[in-house]
Image: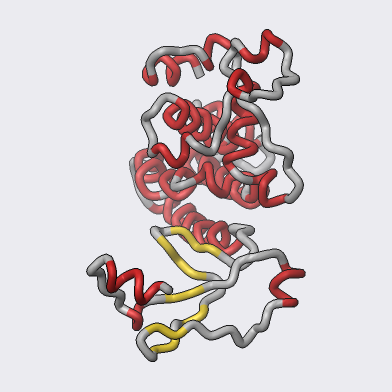
Length: 238
């Protein structure tokens, strides 16, 4: 009981600002009573779909569609402004790039199509390039990385921090090295090269989660990268 837990720990909850959400697959949500009510201190908690937490929009299916739609609107409106100001590249990196980067390891598997298009628009406005010129040439002209490359590097750095004690312990507990699996069926070579055991992805949720795709990405890195002793060296080798 949330109310009792708060009282026990001498905490208070502003019920007027509290929201709730049912999370699950479409099939499970259909079978769930849509009239579910949560009441705390005789006050009904507002149900939302989607809801916002720490700058991220979450929906009932954890598809991140609402979040991607939100940042796409912000990025699109700011891209248009690039045509009207000087110091365009600096403006881009200060007001647009953060939207591509914020918490991207959580939602990057859902976003490739629409955000790639938005990233391709921005350098055209900065360089005043014609749409006849391939996007790859415009990006190369500015020496910009593709969004997929940036997000992959961001996730690699996060995995390094998690596995080397630079992130909270609860994140480290999500991953197991192959060498620590008791009923090991892995090749000896894999167990000594800092590879992780992959969970069996029975659902799309797990396939898209950091627990699975983060471990898969880590295993795809070169051995010298996985065995790097410092974060700065790891970043330089990426």
